[in-house]
Length: 361
Image 1 (cartoon, helix red, strand yellow):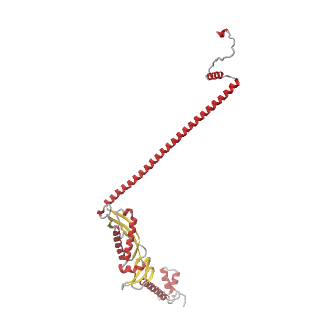
Image 2 (cartoon, rainbow, N blue to C red):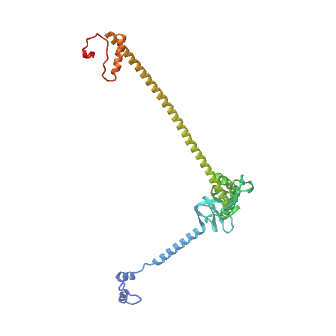
Image 3 (cartoon, rainbow, N blue to C red):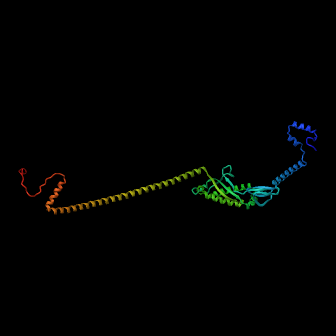
């Protein structure tokens, strides 16, 4: 045993090998790794581990593929043997389940399932074509042709899922059966209502259809109908035009009635205004008459008081001056004449005085 560069190789001396490595362009570290002695049994253990890991993965894959089945959280499953066709009684829901070989699940939705009857490309069937009941205004017509667009939601019951499979088969087959039953019930129930009910009592029709559909699906399919909605109702074009004209006329009648009520209120307001104006005029006239009467009485009383006071004062004046009745009359006449604001000379009888010749002339 000696250094690695002293050992001989099958290809020649260490110097020859050294030259060949230099020609290959390898580094010293690479050459050292090339000539280090290999551990005994290393390659054999690595291969064994690889084979064991591969075999284990293969077994896990085969076990998962043949003995484990997966159900979605909102799915029911019936375990069926693919060879014998036997179906187990127990119904499972969602998750990983260990199954035997050649066994798989028949899948049914656990959530609500929607069925749509319309002209949409997503619908399960076209709108239901049927007829209404006879119109009381036209009993000879036998009802009007209509197309009902609607939607239905039903749900599978875990306890009755085995009965569904035994009577109807897989989910797709059961769904087609439910579509047919629901469409028949919608068409039959529509004949119990007159045309006007489809825009005046649509909620009542929807409730009745849901009740009938639920009863039929439970009796024939062992599922429960939860919700039902009428999306659209299409009558014949001629009948729809007639309906539109009738409704417009009725609405115009209602508008006219409201206009009449408005005019009645306006006239009532005018009558009340006139009555109030008349009452105000009467009150004003009465107040004016009362006011004038009061003023006349006041003037009369003032005049009487004034005249009485004058008489009293004139009497006092007469007594103090010692005037006779004739003299008082003359005094009053002079006083009246003086009110004309002119100069006047009035002769008053008294003691005679001698007059000058000029005066006499």
